[in-house]
Image (cartoon, rainbow, N blue to C red; front, side, top):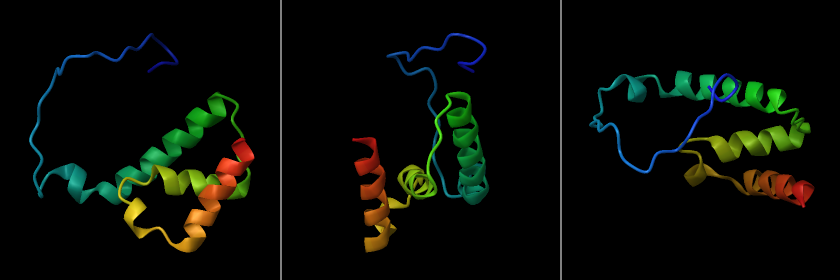
Length: 87
């Protein structure tokens, strides 16, 4: 949206919704995560942010919704490489 109009974060809650095991976002979470990854890559491309392959892997790991608990030692090393490259 920010590519075509101004956006703002509002301090007040405008919508409440309940979370339950049968909602579509729970049943389609893998599909949604893949879609979000595509959107993130497109946005980074628009912002002219080009990642190296190791950085792409780290970025994917960092943006996983529930991936933090399943990090392996290799995953932590990949993330550390991304952070080192940024400094």
